Length: 165
Image (cartoon, rainbow, N blue to C red):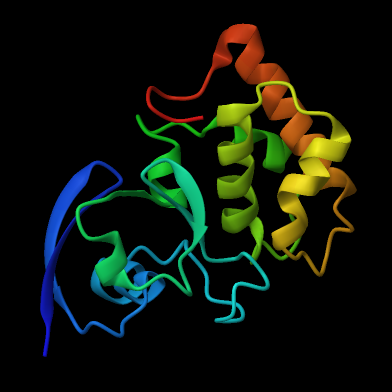
């Protein structure tokens, strides 16, 4: 039996009928065609599915879609806004914080959550924030450098789009 849920995803309101057992990541990818949110493990171990729900980074592979009813959800597709890249996206590109790119959306969403609460994190704080996200390609050094670069860019006034971190 389907339940009706209402979500605002990347600023766009949606009303969807979903089975109560469906995960938020499935609704985002399969119903809304927002495939930037990746499924890597289905157990919250890898972090590739990280999105923001009401401004907080969550792993959408273990959150039921019905739990997000009435919430505002932001995915990697909605991070940039206004056609330009978010400073985190630019920094990941410029600092080579990605290789295969599979983990990148989750890494960026976790980093955005971190920078929303800590505008100038230390390398230790960045690494701690990333603990729940796995990258099998980069060795993390360039990811940390990218997040530091984005923090500097945001502090210098190139800032994140309104409402984003």
